[in-house]
Image (cartoon, rainbow over all chains, first blue to last red; front, side):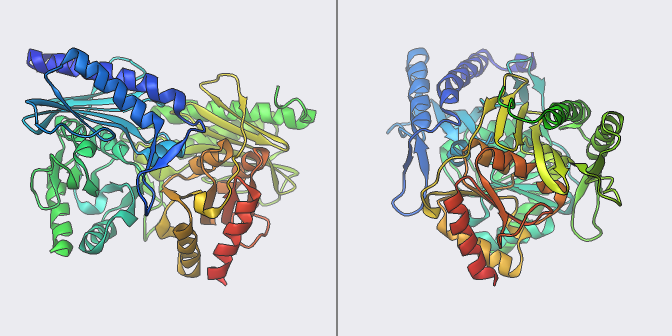
Length: 270
Length: 270
């Protein structure tokens, strides 16, 4: 067992996170690639939400309330508790709703667990492909279709010029952030777009090197951070602060590349 | 059988195309998400090719030479015949090598069959997810993991403002093409990036509405065109010419949207 060194409470909670991810699959998959209603959260622009997002979050909240009634839940669709509990489950039932409604397989279910506001356990689940990445203090694993989990690790990367960079949408950056991103993009070898949480899963599995985003919320990042750190990667915001609550996120498989990318982004953003 | 109305020679060739796609899966999958060598086809820029691309094309060429020695083969990695046969198999062993080397599941194996230079049969295969889309004159289907194929069709779309648009990389457009693309992007509801052939599969399956690209080669389009047309969609180049040899491709699930998108693209490109 890769998770053998985890203390009993965390091991128990990680096992429970698996059950949550299984339940989310049951709720969401019947609605994938079906003609379901799409609501727009914005009056100007397009931020879609579907019954799949809402029903999955409700289902996970029910399971958590039953098993850990003393824990808090902060979910994208139904909000955060007014007072922070010691343990808080941070849920994004469908990260990448735009990909989901387009039929693409690069969205994911994000289940994070925070202790005292810091992310400690994370699950990224892709129900359609049947993929699951999990992270905890000191380790990370990957499994497909319920097969035996395998340990994963990020890959080394010698220089920005050799790096593969991911971001969700280049048009989401503005002003100095856009300049910083463009300067970084011009240096790396390859850039991939449109991936949401799937990019961080690839980083943890060692097939890409950098992910750069801005404007993230806590429910976008809480599950990702333990997976990346557990796989040996590094996460910061663009200016090196604690990224636990979102904002501008920079993740790298190789710590030296994180530093180089930070310098590049800061050069243009200050 | 959805393909019951196909004449015997074409039905036979479509069944053979399935065998080709199965063989490509066998060759490529063991190299997916592995640390394999990546060569760069360009001296300036980055156009990756791997042994997975080359080995798959060699394997398919062997099968074709054995079964249909009189047919031509035009493949991305090993080139085109000097003289065009009546029937030519047009192969892109990995469309989306950039996605492939990044571990993403949105690349595909493209197998097209042209008669007299016109694409008549097409297969888009995604080996890792286990998905296969096929098209022929009058129909198209989808199957996963070898399950029974289901008929697919594109979806209606009332207006550009309601459309989901896909393209592989917005930085691949230049000059007037970029202006045309940006004008179109500004009108649609949602844009997704980085998908290569997977975008056309989504169009055929009715989860996106438009795909716009430029600079395509024959091996990029020969397999896609029969799938889109078989599913009820329309394909043209941006100026309405025959897209059989690539160039600027515009594909739509709804013919009215194709016309509207053409007008938008032409406005800025002339």
